[in-house]
Amino acid sequence: MDLLLIIDFQNDFINEQTKNSVNELNKLVNSNKYEKIVFTRFINSEDNPCYKMNWKDCMTEEGRKIPIDTKDYPVFDKTTYTAYNQELINYLKENNINNIYIAGFDIDCCVLATAFNLFENNYNTYILKDYVYSCISDEIKMITIDILERCIGKDHVV
Image (cartoon, rainbow, N blue to C red; front, side, top):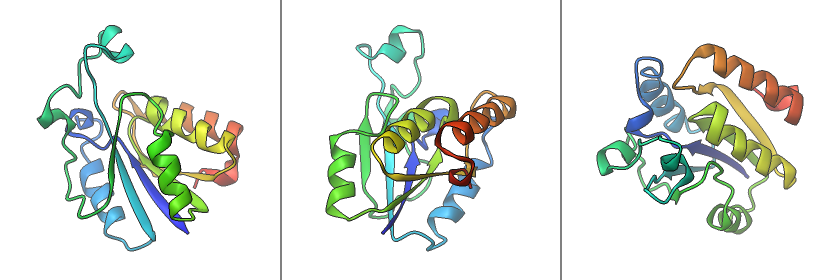
Protein backbone atom coordinates (compact mmCIF):
# COMPACT_ATOMS: atom_id res chain seq x y z
CA MET A 1 0.00 0.00 0.00
CA ASP A 2 1.21 3.52 -0.81
CA LEU A 3 1.25 6.42 1.65
CA LEU A 4 1.54 10.13 0.95
CA LEU A 5 3.27 11.65 3.98
CA ILE A 6 2.88 15.43 4.06
CA ILE A 7 5.32 16.88 6.54
CA ASP A 8 4.66 20.12 8.43
CA PHE A 9 2.45 21.84 5.87
CA GLN A 10 1.55 24.72 8.19
CA ASN A 11 0.78 28.43 7.99
CA ASP A 12 4.09 29.43 9.57
CA PHE A 13 5.96 27.85 6.64
CA ILE A 14 4.03 29.73 3.97
CA ASN A 15 5.90 32.80 2.74
CA GLU A 16 6.76 34.50 -0.54
CA GLN A 17 9.13 31.64 -1.36
CA THR A 18 6.52 28.91 -0.72
CA LYS A 19 3.17 30.55 -1.47
CA ASN A 20 2.47 28.21 -4.42
CA SER A 21 2.66 25.20 -2.11
CA VAL A 22 -0.92 25.69 -0.92
CA ASN A 23 -2.44 25.10 -4.37
CA GLU A 24 0.13 22.46 -5.32
CA LEU A 25 -0.31 20.34 -2.19
CA ASN A 26 -4.08 20.75 -2.25
CA LYS A 27 -4.11 19.33 -5.80
CA LEU A 28 -1.81 16.48 -4.74
CA VAL A 29 -4.04 15.56 -1.79
CA ASN A 30 -7.11 15.59 -4.04
CA SER A 31 -5.45 13.67 -6.90
CA ASN A 32 -6.54 10.23 -5.63
CA LYS A 33 -3.04 8.90 -6.43
CA TYR A 34 -2.39 7.57 -2.94
CA GLU A 35 -4.26 4.94 -0.98
CA LYS A 36 -3.44 6.60 2.34
CA ILE A 37 -2.51 10.16 3.34
CA VAL A 38 -1.05 11.36 6.63
CA PHE A 39 -0.12 14.88 7.70
CA THR A 40 2.37 15.84 10.38
CA ARG A 41 2.25 19.06 12.35
CA PHE A 42 5.28 20.53 14.10
CA ILE A 43 4.56 21.81 17.60
CA ASN A 44 7.15 24.24 18.93
CA SER A 45 7.46 25.20 22.58
CA GLU A 46 9.91 26.89 24.92
CA ASP A 47 11.28 23.43 25.81
CA ASN A 48 12.05 22.57 22.19
CA PRO A 49 15.65 22.73 20.90
CA CYS A 50 14.40 24.68 17.86
CA TYR A 51 13.01 27.36 20.17
CA LYS A 52 16.26 27.43 22.11
CA MET A 53 18.16 28.13 18.88
CA ASN A 54 15.90 31.17 18.45
CA TRP A 55 13.31 29.73 16.05
CA LYS A 56 9.93 30.90 17.34
CA ASP A 57 7.51 29.71 14.63
CA CYS A 58 4.80 27.07 15.12
CA MET A 59 4.06 28.37 18.62
CA THR A 60 0.45 29.48 18.01
CA GLU A 61 -2.65 27.64 16.81
CA GLU A 62 -2.83 29.88 13.75
CA GLY A 63 0.83 29.26 12.90
CA ARG A 64 0.40 25.50 13.33
CA LYS A 65 -2.76 25.34 11.22
CA ILE A 66 -2.65 23.29 8.02
CA PRO A 67 -3.82 25.65 5.22
CA ILE A 68 -5.97 23.10 3.37
CA ASP A 69 -8.78 20.77 4.33
CA THR A 70 -7.19 17.63 5.81
CA LYS A 71 -10.54 15.85 5.48
CA ASP A 72 -10.49 12.77 7.69
CA TYR A 73 -6.81 12.05 7.15
CA PRO A 74 -4.73 11.53 10.28
CA VAL A 75 -2.65 14.44 11.56
CA PHE A 76 0.27 13.42 13.77
CA ASP A 77 1.79 16.08 15.99
CA LYS A 78 5.55 16.04 16.48
CA THR A 79 8.13 18.04 18.39
CA THR A 80 11.29 16.96 16.56
CA TYR A 81 12.58 17.27 13.02
CA THR A 82 11.72 13.69 12.13
CA ALA A 83 8.21 12.38 11.65
CA TYR A 84 9.56 8.90 12.30
CA ASN A 85 8.11 8.31 15.75
CA GLN A 86 6.11 5.55 17.41
CA GLU A 87 2.78 6.95 16.20
CA LEU A 88 3.92 6.86 12.56
CA ILE A 89 5.60 3.46 12.97
CA ASN A 90 2.38 1.99 14.36
CA TYR A 91 0.37 3.50 11.50
CA LEU A 92 2.76 2.08 8.90
CA LYS A 93 2.53 -1.40 10.39
CA GLU A 94 -1.24 -1.36 10.94
CA ASN A 95 -1.85 -0.27 7.35
CA ASN A 96 0.75 -2.48 5.65
CA ILE A 97 2.45 0.51 4.03
CA ASN A 98 5.02 -0.52 1.42
CA ASN A 99 5.90 2.78 -0.24
CA ILE A 100 6.10 6.19 1.40
CA TYR A 101 5.99 9.32 -0.75
CA ILE A 102 7.13 12.44 1.08
CA ALA A 103 5.97 16.01 0.43
CA GLY A 104 6.04 19.13 2.59
CA PHE A 105 8.36 21.35 4.63
CA ASP A 106 11.24 22.08 5.10
CA ILE A 107 13.23 19.88 2.77
CA ASP A 108 16.50 20.74 4.52
CA CYS A 109 15.18 19.93 8.01
CA CYS A 110 12.11 17.81 8.70
CA VAL A 111 11.78 16.23 5.24
CA LEU A 112 15.47 15.31 5.22
CA ALA A 113 15.46 13.88 8.75
CA THR A 114 12.31 11.86 8.09
CA ALA A 115 13.58 10.53 4.76
CA PHE A 116 16.83 9.36 6.36
CA ASN A 117 15.02 7.69 9.26
CA LEU A 118 12.57 5.88 6.99
CA PHE A 119 15.32 4.80 4.59
CA GLU A 120 17.53 3.53 7.43
CA ASN A 121 14.60 1.49 8.72
CA ASN A 122 14.10 -0.23 5.35
CA TYR A 123 11.00 1.59 4.13
CA ASN A 124 10.67 2.26 0.39
CA THR A 125 10.97 6.02 0.66
CA TYR A 126 10.43 8.48 -2.17
CA ILE A 127 10.79 12.25 -2.21
CA LEU A 128 8.29 14.08 -4.41
CA LYS A 129 10.72 16.75 -5.59
CA ASP A 130 7.98 18.99 -7.00
CA TYR A 131 6.13 18.92 -3.67
CA VAL A 132 8.88 19.57 -1.15
CA TYR A 133 9.77 23.10 -0.19
CA SER A 134 12.38 25.29 1.43
CA CYS A 135 11.24 28.43 3.21
CA ILE A 136 14.67 29.90 2.54
CA SER A 137 15.51 29.41 -1.14
CA ASP A 138 15.32 27.23 -4.22
CA GLU A 139 19.09 26.84 -3.95
CA ILE A 140 18.74 25.13 -0.54
CA LYS A 141 16.01 22.92 -2.01
CA MET A 142 18.23 21.85 -4.92
CA ILE A 143 21.25 21.22 -2.69
CA THR A 144 19.13 19.05 -0.40
CA ILE A 145 17.67 17.16 -3.35
CA ASP A 146 21.25 16.41 -4.45
CA ILE A 147 22.03 15.11 -0.96
CA LEU A 148 18.91 12.94 -0.95
CA GLU A 149 19.72 11.53 -4.39
CA ARG A 150 23.18 10.61 -3.15
CA CYS A 151 22.02 9.15 0.16
CA ILE A 152 18.76 7.33 -0.64
CA GLY A 153 19.17 6.95 -4.42
CA LYS A 154 18.34 8.98 -7.52
CA ASP A 155 15.47 6.63 -8.27
CA HIS A 156 13.92 7.59 -4.93
CA VAL A 157 13.71 11.29 -5.74
CA VAL A 158 10.83 11.45 -8.19
